[in-house]
Length: 110
Image (cartoon, rainbow, N blue to C red; front, top):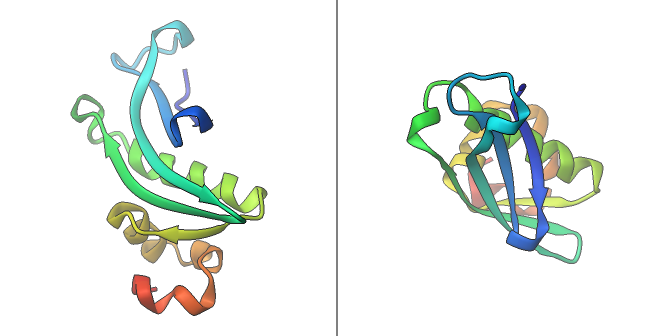
């Protein structure tokens, strides 16, 4: 199975699902990482991102960031990257900087 990013609004987080053993089987997928958020009036504040160490080195954290930010863009949400990982990822991918309100970019070093 190709890793998938899914929104879990009941948990206030995006999750990336992947097979622990590199399996392509969807029934073996498990949560490899997550990005927690707080949603309010047109804004999504990312507060914490974590990846299970068993999945390290597979680029899943970056895929998680991209998937969550792409969804925020599609939903027309402004992004507040309080999470150091999400903030750093945006810094390395300037095509996502526009998601952060211009007046708040300096606050996040963007």
